[in-house]
Length: 229
Image 1 (cartoon, rainbow, N blue to C red):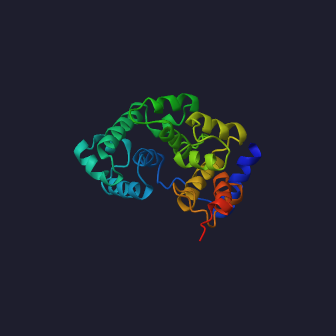
Image 2: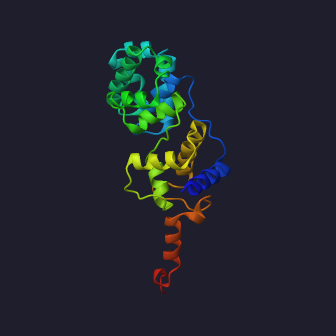
Image 3: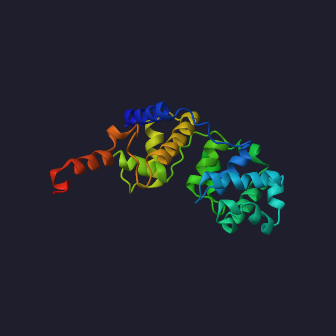
């Protein structure tokens, strides 16, 4: 399995190159982006963050003090702005109560992760995005793209839980935050280009080892699948 994941990483890296994630000016901005990106695409998040930056609201104190109605208007491009407003407010309160982002960074991952998960609206994917991209912790971020890709490659069942998928990376790869950073970003890039809900297999760098692509090719090549004229 270690070989399979390393091979997957190298093939994606060779195909797409370094991704330079997470695009942000500060660890706090990374955390804000991790909350805003829930159930939306990154282009919408960028619009919301640009509005927050223009309002000088990209620090815990300023963002925490903005009236909720104003904050909802600023983050409206990211969608679900009412829920995300509450989550941002809760996160800002958490950061302020614990002395800031840098002070939280002094905590061990095993202590910090449960604290993040206890904040309103922050689940495993959001918490792990913060840990990896804001605090450079070797915690692999699992998302829907990861689950889809590993299932199609036949590496793990599509019914596997978040924890099972994350354990796969933690147990079979070096615990290296830089590698986890690139690997997750490469999976996202691959999903956008090829491994979509309706996959675009033409030109896919993983086509030869993809169980779904192989099965699809076998079906289309089968005499029973051809149309008789």
